Length: 314
Image 1: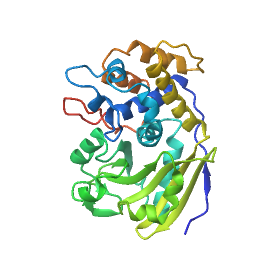
Image 2: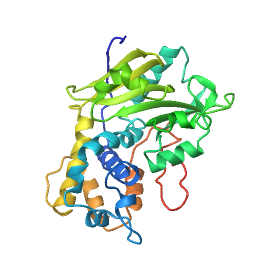
Image 3: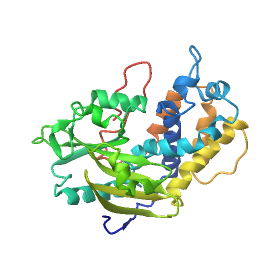
Image 4: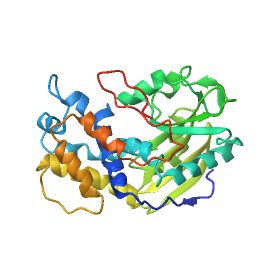
């Protein structure tokens, strides 16, 4: 059974440099962090070569990014959502999700609320694996269940909203969900949820024929799932794909290839060009520092998984 579909209106963007930094940052994070990509910084560049954009291009097949484009659309959305849902543009979307999940289970997720973060969560990601191994939080709806003691049941979950509260609540709350970057219709099928962790409360995906953001609930054998669908024609999704396309051009032709840019985009591209031969973690951190994040998202997101032990970025 599906509930009535609701439209969600995000905030108008006002910092275009931060907006485009968010898109390019997410693409580069996916290329650095996601294990399942055929080509990525971690496994495509042999030691002792430094992990740079230039070396990724040198040690992969010609036109490699075009070969993984669809997977990058899909899995890359997880990394994008981590930043988008903590941004001024996406905070309204996050709030609607929280309110809907709260209503479904008659529990105010904003009660005694202090801060939140959004994390890639699962062993398909290097930093997602670290998150699972180091985070102590109660699974939403299951006070006796924590990330640690249900690890085997949630190790393939895609995304986690982590909430901390003011003194009085002893444990953080982990709200788990699935992401479908290419085909959101899967999220509306009970057969899909029967194959996923029963601890999931939401799903976020890209709908091929939509140009807005829609929210609805579906009832499954493992509980109510709140489904947020981003239209493929919604500008935030289109701009994520444009960012991938620009990098694809740089890899296949040259990072100096001349392109036409929209406001805010050129500044970020010039930073990427300048860092083409520099460590990718340095570039990603520069882009992360350009992101505008709401004050309540002070927990942050996954740190990059590098040779040293990563910690949560705040």
